[in-house]
Length: 373
Image (tube, rainbow, N blue to C red; front, side):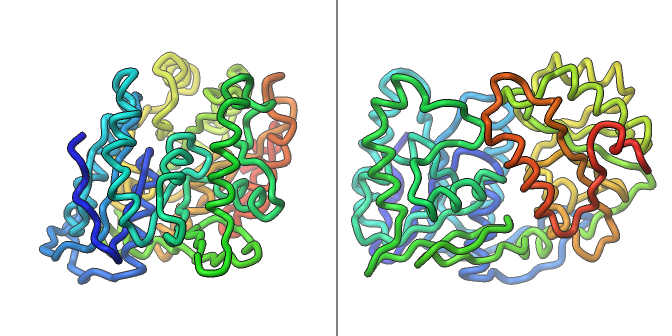
């Protein structure tokens, strides 16, 4: 990557590794400095002529091609909003991380505020160690992981993803000092603010400012969507992360599609082609590979009047993005019997919390209960 445009004192530097993180950076930036409202055309983003915003977004590009594709489209939306976007080939080869970190050292020391999407990321934790001590910090949603991050921060615990089992082996042990340093940087103290910008139901730890994300940018720039008469089902990567048994997941998908008449399955970007093929054959649904985060796809439309989901971020975000459209969001709970032996002991409780705190989504239960209309 070429060195990012050096932020001046007072400018903001954001690091993202997924399309959802970049979407939420745009939502945060819109709340901080609302841009002019322009009418959209048939659900598409309206062209916008805006001055530079003072925000530089650095995309730490992952390997996954689906994620990269969505990130490139999100990056263009960010540029359309007047933000500087730098694409870092941060994982291309053994020396790529060192080159990326070296190129970011200067901008990190100059930035007044840092915005990050994944405090659990080892890459981000390394970068935090290079930032100036008094830089303000904002954490935007990286899905439901934000709930776990806020809880661990409040309890003073080591940062561990909710679905991980154990301490991470030798790599985790070697990285422990960096993780501990990142936790200290993310803990507020006098003279340094920490903000959490979230659509998730989180309670503010001491001296952490929680700002609600209501998806105002998404609603202003897209839609309202055209609604179909059908039902759509949202996929999840719980199988890919080793939490849910593949056979149990397929059984639940087939049951939901047959009971509720779902005709489309919106795949998570990390779901494998083999798994999606099996779902298409067994459940008889059309597989849709979204080119943007689902909040934007749904807002752009067309979208079903009912959206079914397993416990995931969208049961919290879609009701916000689709408020006033008449779309109903329903969530199917994950039964304990679906979990694999590799699943973390915290998995069941965490997934139940994701479901139980979804204020604007209907609960369908799990197993046979999910078949009730």
